Amino acid sequence: MAPSRKKTQRSVSRETKERILRLMERFKSIRVLVVGDLIVDEFIWGTVERISPEAPVPVVRVERRSLRWGGAANVANNLRTLGARVLIAGVVGADREGRWLVRDLKRKGIPTDGVWEVRDRPSTLKTRIIAHSQQVVRIDRESRASLAEEIAERIREYLHARSHELDAVIVSDYGKGVVDAHLMDAVREISRRGTVVCVDPKAIPFSIYREVTAVTPNDREAMRAWGKEVRDESTFETMGKELLEMLRCEILLITRGEHGVSLFLNGGHHRHIPTWAKEVYDVTGAGDTLISAFTLSLAAKGNPEDAALLANLAAGIAVSKVGTATVNWRSLRRTLEELEVQDR
Image (cartoon, rainbow, N blue to C red):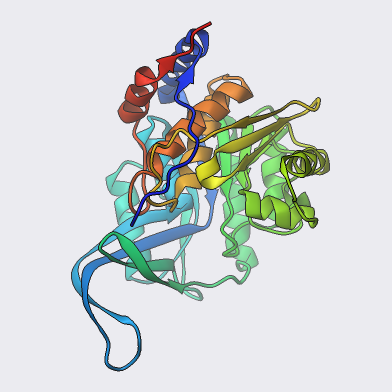
């Protein structure tokens, strides 16, 4: 997969660098609950040597297969590798992939008492066939139906029971039926107590996610929610400010892939932060990495700009890898330490 190259940010002020380094030291004391759509990412790796005689498609000779945590599970995995203490809530199917995910969560020290196995829906499975580091095709097996009320109520009860021990909650909505208005009502109740709540959204309208700490859509999701054409940076800024006002949250962080992120705060403050990535190989799961680092930074009492800078740096590391990636605490700190200090 050929990498793309974009304008990057490669330096920060000495004060900012020292402040963010201190911020990272507090990650290990933060407890975060992730609720949302648990996904299993399957990667089938191989090579292409010929085109099929049956249709004009490549024939992939399979060399290996791997399973990784995806969706809300990938958010939990990023939090874990960044040093946080993690809880998770969601559902899996009564199938091989769901049971593998539950076993692997336990093996890596994440409690699974908030994960329910349901028999009337499959585990969400995204199968990516990769040949020569290039994704050839993706196959999705999923249900987008709402959860049965009994299961949905159990998840809300789990949130309530754990809420008093949390520093932050992340809602990871991939549109597979776990996140709905009732769940968001329960999450808002936690947010009103002062707990940091960040949402990676999927639903339209965005109003379902109102009155939390932060919402982190990508640019396509933001434009769809706004419902108007974005012609230039000025229009983009207008969109961000209007979405923030509609959401009535403290922070709107719009991720823009290889172009970086745009941060909107109450009071009209707006800042664009270019990507840190030198090369972009694969954006799979980069949003999960970003919201993990961003939420941890806010929960550790960082200011929104420092949180956005660090989260954007973490995402820049993630997109330099092929497949669903996580970023660990040591690699993030090392990358931060290597950044140049701006001259005054």
